[in-house]
Each structure stands twice: as structure tokens, then as C-alpha cells.
Amino acid sequence: MILRFTLLLFFVLQQSLSAQEANLAVSLIPAELRENADAVVRLDRLDITISSVKSMSEKKTRIVTVLSESGLKSVNAVEYFDKSTSIQSIEAVVYDQGGNQIKKFKRKDFKEVAVSEGSIITDNRMLYLDYTAVQYPFTIVFASETETSTTAFLPMWSAIEGSYTSTQKSEVNITCNPSLKLKYKEYNFDGAAVTKQQNGNVLSYSAENITAMKREDYSPSYQKIFPFVMFGLDKFYLEGVEGRADSWEAFGTWVYNSLLAGTDELPEETITKIKTVVGTETDPLKKAKKVYEYVQSKTRYISIQLGIGGWKPMKAKDVDRLGYGDCKALTNYTRVLLKAVGVESYYTIIYGDSSKRDIKEDFVSMQGNHVILAIPNDGKIVWLECTSQVLPFGFQGDFTDDRMALLVKPEKSELVRTTIYDAKNNLQACKGNYSISPTGSISASFVMASRGTQYDNKYFLEAKSKSDRDTYYKSGFPNVNNLKIKKADLKNNKDTQEFTEDIAVEADGYCTKTGDKLIFAVNAFNQYSNIPQRYRSRKNPFEISRGFMDTDEMTIAIPEGFVMEAKPENVTIKDKFGEYSVEYITSSTGSLQYKRSLLINSGYYASADYEAYRLFREKIARTDNAKVVLVKK
Image (cartoon, rainbow, N blue to C red; front, side):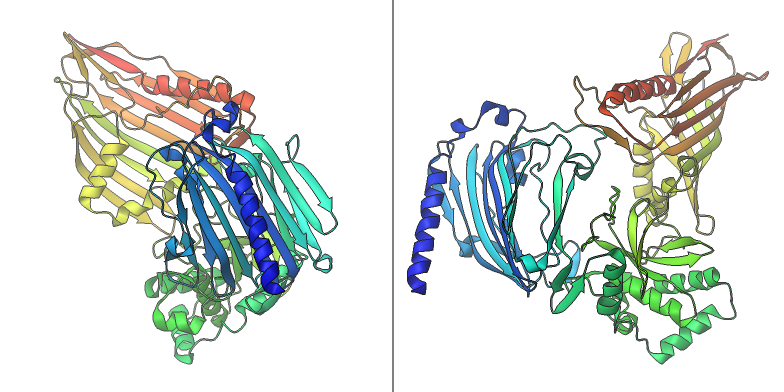
């Protein structure tokens, strides 16, 4: 009886696939879906069945027509597995542009690799299709089925996959045992052409005929502007451990009791040693700084995806013995060391990336990809990035700044926002001088001091070789040709979180020579010259994710025997996007003092504001390239 049913199911699936394959000719794709597209997702269907808190299956059918090499990224013929997730079936069939089958891949034809993402130790593996296209366009039909005992991670659904990819049809269907109380949250659905259906225990979302979008500069992340749905369960199962996600407080308590429990043991000799390191210090932050620097000197970062879904940290005693760990392990190790010297701190879950991404406050679920440490201090929080051997104590940088994160506590876990770096605190201040020779060469010396996220952009230079630094500065001063770096003395003051560059350079041919005149741009070393791209019809809103401020003060010596024939006018520009001012002051000795200030504000703006922002930047770029004309007496 089971055999008959299996054969019948196989026959039905084959008939269904055959019916789909009959319509795979590229010519049948509507013209509007091919416009601006590198690939067309003709069908993306995901069927999820959650029969119990310990049992979930997923069936995927994905049909993608790849129009050019750039569209290969949309194939996504891959499946992941680990000790709690198994791949029941996986296959792919390739068709030419006429819809004729040219190649079929069975499970044995897929490649198996570890899912490292920088990890050297991992439980996670994947099967993926490694197909080399003979010609374009072609179509791939990919089908897979997986089963897992983990119900902590339910896939998110969005019909929009990215720029230059159109979607003919996308759907997700979730069948859930009603006793499990499936929860979901819709985002950015205002005006979205998405169909939702609830039929008994089946929840479905679908969307059709979504045309490809061109990439637009300064667009916010897709999660901020395009519709998507998150799914989850209030009670879930994760590799042998049942969890709760009915509130962030309950979820944080579960993390503390289930994932951190049993990881905080340290050898007695280590406890004695860390107390010796702290010595007689009584101030909690000063004690924490000594512990943090001890961890930096003793450990190194290695990504390890083991344990409960890659979420449970290594034991502190193992990190102490081995001298390495991932973000979870090193953060937990630092937390345990701080506890040994009487300093309270909280293991904190966050999304780590240079693009800001919040843990969603209004949807409790397994979120985040990184862990940092929080130290409460007089109503504020000092944040520690425990994976870095070089970051200053209490400095975050743009990997974890300004986003919601979960403080994990024994009780009353909560979401809080991490450090927000104000634009004026993201400061680069430059002061110095340069001289112009009668032949038009330039010789300069100046000091740049950087703070905030501008510090984050510079401190890595300290560890670079001289040749790498020379390459960096030559590319960093692009409007000075033939640049020679005479000096680049760097000072990284971790206590003040300021990075100072003492630079001396020279270059032949900086000035343009016209008869007995020399013409040169006054702003030699910090032109904000990039102008955002013009769009005939901007579609997306735009975002300036981080503001900053630059100040420049330069004294310019003109060559003997020359006088200034023309200099630019002073300029002040004020807009909601920022402020810019430049001032030119001539002295009795004939030298020119140049003062410049640039402030760019962070902000989220409507698409209608984009052209005004582009013009704002265009004015700055034009003024930054303003020139002085010297003439021989």
C-alpha cells in the first residue's frame, strides 16, 4: 500500500513538472519581465509543513531563466543541512531557450561543501549545483525537499529578490498544526500587489509579474522599502532544546538559561590571574578595560558554527585553554572574566554588518548574526567588540552602531539601541600647509585627526606595511598625480579613540602651466568630488546612513616672483542634507589661507528629494575643485 502511494505521488509530481516544462521557452516570457532583467524567476514556490514543534518539512520548486552571465546569481540551486536537517530529495534540469531539456542533475551530481562563512569549524553543510552555461539564455528547474526537527528558523518570504531580477510568480504556503499557533508579521505592505489567503490551517502569500528594477545609488536596504513577511512560533525546538519566543523578555531568559548555562566555568588559576591583572582597581569601567585588553592579548577570533544551531557559545574554560573562539565564545568568555572581578555585563545579540539592520522589535523570533558585550554604566551602556584584537575599549564602529540589539539577562532581557555616532563626532580635522614651486610642483605637510566612524575607517592603517600605506595614500589623494609619500607617521590613541596621520608629500606637475601662469585647485587633498548618479525617474527613496564632518585648514605659499591673479569667492551652502563653507584669506606676505568645513547629515529621504541632494553634492564638488591663478610678475 505504501509502495503504491509512493509511485502515485511520484507520477503526479512528474506530470506536474512535465506540464510546467512545456511552457519553458524563453519567448513565452512577457516582454515587460525581460526588460532590465538579467534573470527571470518564472516560479518560486515554497511549501512548508509544520506538523509538531519538533517536525518541519520544506518543499521548493524554483524555475529561473538566466538571460545573461550576471543573472547566474539568481539560480540559487542550493540546499543546506546539518545534524538536525536532512535533504530528502534534490534535483535540477536545464533547458535551452526553446524549452528543450539539455541536462539533468541528480543528487550525486550536486557538490557538497561545508558552509564556512569564515568558519573553520562547522556543523553546517550544503549541496549546490555547479553548472557552467554553454549559452544564454537558459532555464533551470530546481526542486528539493528537506526535513528538520528545528522549528526555530522559519523562512522569511519576499517576492522581490533584488535588482535586475524579475519575478513571474512567487508563493509561499505554510501548513501548521493549529496547536502551535503560527505567528507572522507583514512589513512594507502598503500598496503592495501581494495576495494573502487563509484556508483552514494553510496560510499563503503570492505575487505575480514583478518587473526588474535597476539599481539606484543610496537606496535603503530592501527590508526597509519592499514587502516581506516574517514567520515564527511562540514555542519552538532547536536541536534538543525547547524555546520560547512569546516576548523578548522570555526569549532572552531562554537564551540565558538554555544557551549560556554551563558555559561560565573558569579554572581557579585563571580567576586568580585575572584578579591580579585588575589589581587594586575599584572603578568598574577601569577594571573592565583591563579585562578587555587581557582578552585581546590572549585570544584570537575563529568562527565556529557548532552547538545548538551555532547559537550556543563554547565553554569559557575551553576558550581559556585554546586561546580562540567565535563572537559568541569570546563575548561569553569576557563576560565570565568580568563576573570574576565583580563587573556586571550582558551577552548581547545583534545583526553585525556595515549596513544597519535592527532586530525587529515587533516580532519575537531567532534573529541576529553576531554577539557583542554590554556593560551598564551610570544609566548608559559601554559596548565591547570582543572579536577584535585592536579596537579600543568601548569603541563600536560601523559594524554594530545605531541598531536594536537584545540584552540577554537572567530576567528582564530587553531590546536597546547601540551607540549612535553624531555627524559632528564622525570628524576628520586636517591642518597643515603646502607650497607651490615656480615649476608647478607641490610640497605639503599636514596632520589629519579622525574620530568616530572616521576613526573606524583609518585605524587599520597602523598594521599596514609601508608599501601598502603608500598605495592607500596615492589612491586617497586622486587629484594629485605623481604623488610621492615622504612621511606617514601614524598614531592610534586608543584612550581618546583618535587616529592621527602626520603626512608629508610632494608631486611634480600639480599645477597647469599656461604661458606665464600657474593654475591649481586649492583643495589638493580632500575633494568631495563624487557626484551621485542622475536618474530620469528615481523610483526608490534614498538614505544617507551615516553623517560625518570634515574640517580643513591649509596655508598655501605661492612661489617667489608670482602674484595671485585670481582666486575663488567664499562660498556657503546650507541644506537639509548638510552644510558646506569655504573661505580664502590672503595675507600681506602673499600666502593664501584656505578654510573649509563640510557637514553631511544622516537621513532617510523621499525619492522626490534625490535630485536636490544630487545638486547639493554637485555644488560641493564644483567648489572643491575651484582654482587659483598665479601669474609671473
